[in-house]
Image (cartoon, rainbow, N blue to C red; front, side, top):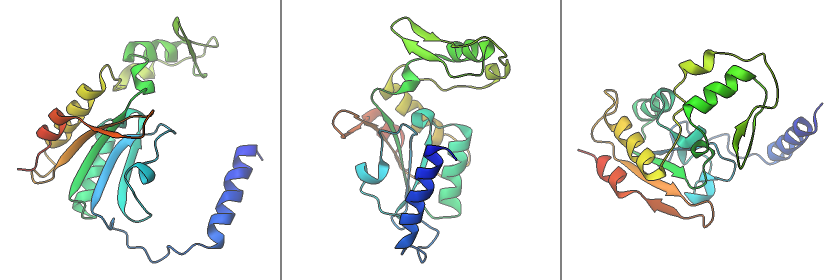
Length: 192
């Protein structure tokens, strides 16, 4: 058994020992959802003041409004009653460090973990790689404010998203813990 697996199972045993959340309802109590990045430095429970059962948190690389993220938001609203949504990207995001072309090249070379230095991304190994990466929109980020605004617009313009749901746009600052509003995103996300 790996060290990580052992630690996770031990932590779960400790959590279970005084678990008292069995009666929480399925719908989020505060009726909102957050779409944010999977970056380990972000803790939406802390930066948004959440407890278990408060809100839906949807995470992916970059906190991008991918088809699957929008699917989750629509389910969150339609079946579980959320009424407001947040798109929260963050400073110093890994999605700013590469392009779709770089990712495709790395995957073509090998499927092993790559590394980055001052000269850019490098693959550690030779093949086998895969050409399947060229079929994915990696949704990389050039500018955080622009990407937040694009994601809010993508969500609001989706035919399955009701116009009366407000979508707010923010950037989490990994150095201060603060949420910085992206006014163009919040304006684009207004309920109508």
